[in-house]
Length: 390
Image (cartoon, rainbow, N blue to C red; front, side, top):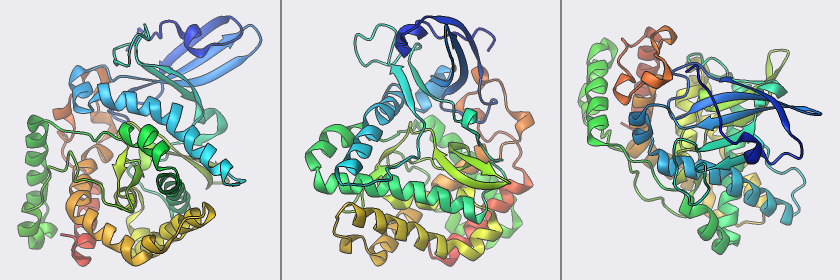
């Protein structure tokens, strides 16, 4: 990945002055982000310095196909360019003083070099604030979050979900025109699905502690893409991939004080329960979640209701009992499979990850599962079984 360039960067940024120099390098290590190539771009103009992030297509066409980049990259551009400003404007119109602040600043984008249509090609790029400059960091993906950090992320999710629900209820025309059409679901080829199933069956048979659950585990349907239709009234804008690597936190004296959500490329129109379950069981330390799972679910729901009340929505249809039904449905129908499959990239040994240009879908999960991977899978199985979710 030595020849890193972004053609016509000056036109894309629409700066008032000439760019004097540009330094571009890879922002993340191979294997930390499969669905795109993330670049750090340091720009010097005649009077100032600008540090941004450029998100581009993954270099391997097979990965572009797996992530349906012609759709998902376009949707992520729209998320930053249209959806986030719409949600913020909606809050301001309702007198909200502290508007949502869970996403990086948007600097510009293009689907292609010529801007003739919306077709995504190799020159597609999305320019965003470099959150690292403000002290935000990714935490270690295999360790999981502590309780305070987990609450920051759940608060962000409640903001995303709650404001979107309120917009849907109070401005349905705007929601249907601007937001809902952008929520096109991810689909997965039979080849990729078959590969996932082989790896899933191999790992569940390799862990003695899972033997009592094997009959149930073998019946799990891994074919969760595209997902079932979203159910009302909870259906909302869902991140759909909220785990450690897709969050960043700002630390003070070792404690997380702010958080940001990143990577909205497979966001969809779905139940908020999907994001809550996936985040809880993919990204929080086992010992904390074992003790605090129910409390964290309540914490999320309390924040969701607070957002809806602030935006003058009737909260009765969104009571905790109804939300519990959403959790039960999504845990069984989509999120156990989602978690079981995503543990492969989450716990991939760093030394085994290839150059981004060489990574293909079948490489995900090819490494021998680590003990941390197995431990997390056992934890998820036991917790889901306890709740009758498998």
